[in-house]
Image (cartoon, rainbow, N blue to C red; front, side, top):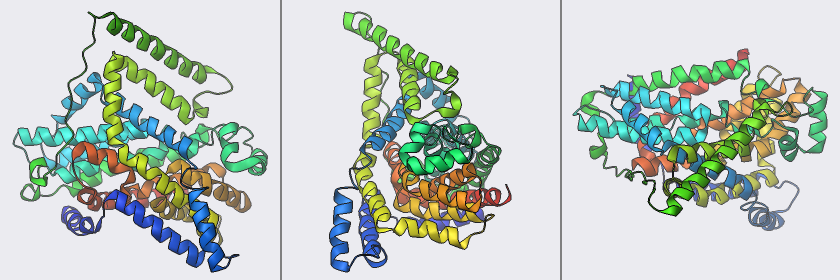
Length: 465
């Protein structure tokens, strides 16, 4: 029954899913209309139109350029790591393990989710590469596999990533410096009064009991749902039947030992890699920093260092980064559009209205749940964990203080809502679509069902914890 439901949704919802760029453009227009109708309550309509355009142009589309660069680096360094010869051999070996459509989908989903908890960029690329290679392997061995479901499984790392080491809200609030940049001086004073003068450490968020249960449970629930979604062999569509044209692997760049610059380049890259990894280890052992104070810059540095080591040659690493850049090209061009949407939502008051409605309708018990649901709605319009936390975070923290709800729990409520609706919003799926050759409409029916199961699990623990 679950498998039939998956096929039905894939064939119905999928037909309505536009290209991701068209969706971003459409959401921009819809948000502008909503802002003019329901926002800017203190302005007349003619003034509101001018203000909206100014907010979108001056304060919006260019606001998160530095954050966009951080996210792009997480993606390309994660791709380069997954694209290294050692990891590619591991992915190839794993791709030969499944024998049935259900085994294939569950395996891809588990690996994508597990690596997504380590680093969302790594999880996204490993999931995409594994989905592609499992599809190829199953077809080559004459075994049935449903390639759209495999690709949907490869995307589930974006369903769990906020509960892992690269979760934006947690790492952007783990130090006083990062937290102040988002919450501001006034809320930092309130944060100190709540016992968090130096920010909210990761042992209260990422490594909390709540998150260990929620994210650990998803590592079981998501593969199980994917297993149940596997259709009968007669309904399976292989890579060839789907008509996908996956990105081709290029052979690893050989390390040149006969030319002086080849040897020198390798030595230089190893020296820089050792320095990056050593700096990361020094950060971890610093009593004033440590693992609970990790930020996006530290993650990017160590991912860069490990990638250089695993590729061996700087030329090989550069070629891998070039391939990664092709995969994230759509994200780079759409980031300004979603930053503009975020600015409109913020300056028009629409986002505050959504958060305030959730706060007023909730009790101290249900506030995290309502915040979780509102964050899921906002994420569909603004698919950026860090960007969304930058606007909704201060509202969530202030509301939590007033209601007496633990601040780390509210942070995770926003995080869970943000990651949940990634399964309907194809923005972050663009690299996966480029690698596997499928379209967003091919996977969204399956990811929607996985989203519902995961959402129920998250909501349950936000209520009972």
